[in-house]
Length: 302
Image (cartoon, rainbow, N blue to C red; front, side, top):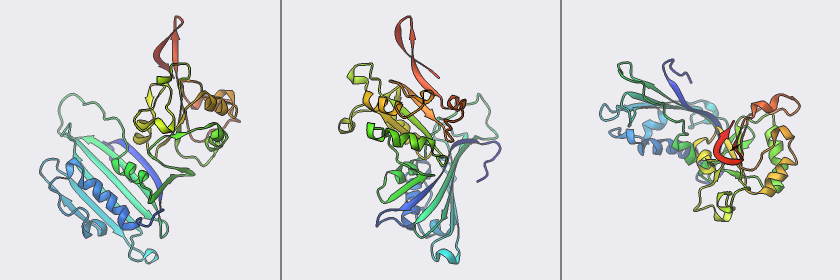
């Protein structure tokens, strides 16, 4: 997918999605995209989203409100019969907060087998050529809603390389610490792994709650909300949490000192982690509380 030179990449990812339930099929997958567009604020006055043209290929637009445009295309081959071998979607519209910002979402789907698809998506934005004024603040990158929707459905299984994708954090227990370290060293890993450790030096309210008590409580660790991170970075990063001192110690017993995770720390493990390279640990940055005059401050160093 080509990105215009005057555009900014807001979000970009590619993942494998596999049917894992009776309801999952090609029409269900395309239906998720049409549902996302239909519920989008900029989809007003666009008729027929989800109709036959949407699956086969066509263009619909609206000059009112957000100047929205939806375009799809498909290519069929004998290999997959009535199901397209390739299918693309482009959704363009003006911004809600800033009407001079033009948004574009490109989605490409390739049928890999009867029940498996490769999906790639790029979200970009640019300012109109006739915009005059101070440059507005750049929007914070976030994953499109349809990614979180697909990743949360039981009828679909998403993966990036060897790693499964879910829009929620994984817990690293004492029993799984060794497995987590093996996953970090896997040369086929394509996504970032963000590990958050509970602040076990603080009172109980600041530690990560157990799984049974997490439904009503936000997970706050090293100043970060693990649930929110997992949703915003779906398909680009896996968020993992060490919920106890026992889990932290167990993880550190398997990793070299340069890759340790300490209480209250957040660490980003990049792909291609190589513990045999004595300088590699510098690529995997961390955030940790700083101490000033013997007192802990709510500051972090990286």
